[in-house]
Image (cartoon, rainbow, N blue to C red):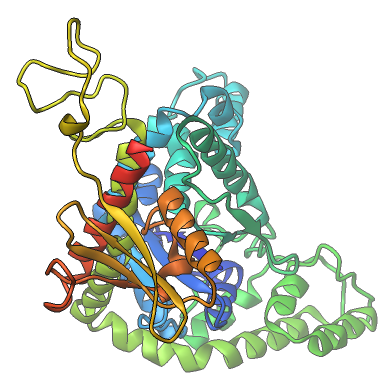
Length: 458
């Protein structure tokens, strides 16, 4: 199960980021059946702010926050969006199959139009192409890594649905390349209220910084808007921003106790003190680590660069496959209508007067060889046209299992078959693969190219 989470680098991380994205994502990443991806969405930040210093500062703050909250870079893939060059490339491929009508329905775009209509301004006033294309960029973030699940707040569910629509359209045109992602919303904390009762958001300037010093944290909490009910008067938990914030940090028993206190007429000052103490109990241990990381930006940068290299090991191969799928291919590669032949100069597929290709003209292709091992189990290997070993399987109990693995590789490719990776070993450089292992990235790229050649020829 691949789970992907990103946060836009437009400001200081706040309690809403922590409760709605960081904490549940980190908990999920501890599961053995989860392959977790975490990224800093600095391309998205360009849509919301034109302050370079703010974006850079926010990137450091968010990276330090993830690490301080317990992210393990060895266990997960942690990277900065702009370090993955394949993301903007995929954004363009998706743009070319995404209907404008779909983007017209995006909540953020419609809100901008409604705001202009209410003020009597031109409908496009202040609406950039970046705002309009935001859902496509978000789809590229998700689809490049074929994420199965994306934890989001309820207000972001539409973007995941749009990513599914875009992925389905691409798959319809070019074959099954993308997994259709699912939104995961924690119904208890999908949207955390801010100081004024609205959604906690940098856009509303109503946030509580996650690692604010204790005295500032207490001051902000005591400034949360409440009604005028006096101590002793029963209070409603429904619609209470104070109660919702407490519930996001407290256990079920703690929340039930505060609900009883509301019914018994707890004073707002006492309720706010309870909220401060509960949040401080969870945040304080992480605050010291955050401050250490903020003082070491070079160490944080090194973590991001290592994460980007890890992410691109799969992204680069997958992007190559997508280029092939849409027709952005070397001219000598078979598989497309009107492909140009390189032998014979002016001869090309489909050229007027071109002679039919003979068997001798056809290039040799990579091939799978299935065999039985001395212990009675079954295995296969993939070799290129010269007999160089590209991929060696582990053994299977039956020849049918080995054949099924071969079929899945032919259909999906090495880069898109992570479930098979534990059963495969990248080959060496000699005709029989006995001269040692090749560079893993180069070997994986060679295996993917061989599988693409087989798909194109089939």
